[in-house]
Image (cartoon, rainbow over all chains, first blue to last red; front, top):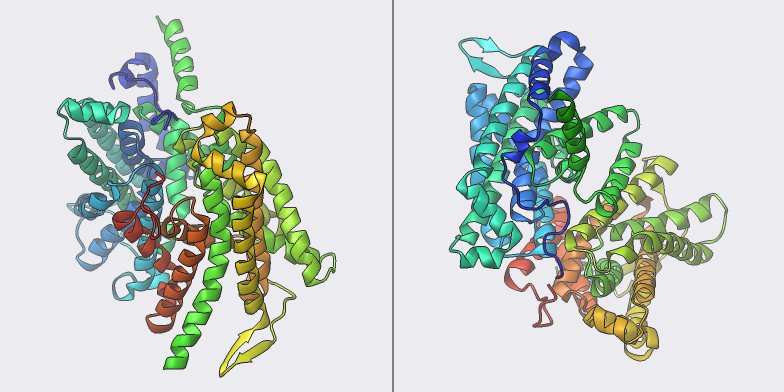
Length: 333
Length: 290
């Protein structure tokens, strides 16, 4: 193996760069724009933004694996599906409020990932990728065949809309928008706190040189296992939002499509950075919505995007975005 | 009961031969590229579709469509190999995963876009049954078995005796040494890739009549089952693939017959994960290729 962590991973940088690089005025403009979006945009664009926020959380999770520990996983789709089922089943059978479902989806998915990670993480490179792909197929098979719980191919429909407690129920698209914006901001902040902590630096050390990290006394095995479970938890959170937004889910939630989408968001945006993943989820949704009339064409474009990323844009579009930011900052000061 | 078991075994061996033929190509490509071809099943699909196209649109007979289907697929593979696969020789493993996943999306959806996403009937083939004792088997299945065994013998001879075969083995062992010794690594990679996809296409054309219906997404399941076969056979081990394919085929056949048809497609993955956990070097060798 000549270069164990070549694609899409920038050189070691403190995570604060994610915040520093954006000019302050642009940050303020973006924040105002996001808050005012329901006033400015019609429901179609709000729907697109909501979709990008749903995919943002699993993408953060995958970023933790790809960008911060240097592995490559296709299992995000499986954990996304598990999270959506956990959240939907809780809401349907116990009528618990949305916060409980949301947290439970993440926690349960993370706990399911923990024992799966113990054997899976012994594998490297290709074997790990194939194994994570296997988790998606097994997830789909369970969702299809555990009929007493999942209702098989019929799926679960009539999933309650988010109850926030105190009799507040989210029903309008504007309501969804603010709820998911809140969740996306909080989870992104949590993610940022995690990767800029000493634990985050330890993960980056594992990515850059696992043997050396081990030699420095970092318990690499425990870190990888925790990262795997945390990334699954993030996917589970996204699944919960997905279930309560669509109000219907089926074994199709375990399609390869979701794993591929999340992979494209992370690598297309730029693994190892937070802004990359945020930009990636917005760009992906823009492309995806623009092509919604031709789903096959959309998948073909995804395919070309993957080739483009491998051969021409190994760091994703983040370097381009950074250039724009640098220009903007140059003008503002 | 005894006959039922025998029938399951025979069905399993024939289904397994199909997997083995596809997997032999994938394992050879892995040998020279050290890249898992996530698009491999798409060439199986392309083989079937090319044959379906020339039969139903150009009106050629099934035996001719076998040749045309394989040649057309290999032509597409030559372009893909030239543009993409050759550049993966020294690339890190992530590049191989992403590039071949991308190719899989492109090939699969281009077919759906071009010919529609509906199921199509595959015309042709020799489906009249032949009786062995009380068990009836379609001629087509017997042909699949014979062709598979013949192809594996031919592959063994090619890899062991010919200059190309020796080059493939050499590239599998050490790329730098090959380059130093005047072996054109890129050419060997391209040739192996085209040969490997040709095997997948052959498998696709031969199974078209048995599968009866064909559709654009049919390659995906084949890719996934092939993973189980190449890991069981030992990555890069052509001989092991045939036995591994048969084992998977028989296991699937028993699960489908005695537990439930809907669990059949998960068998490969359970085997895959179990193999990766407990015997990552494959059933037949001790040395890991990873």
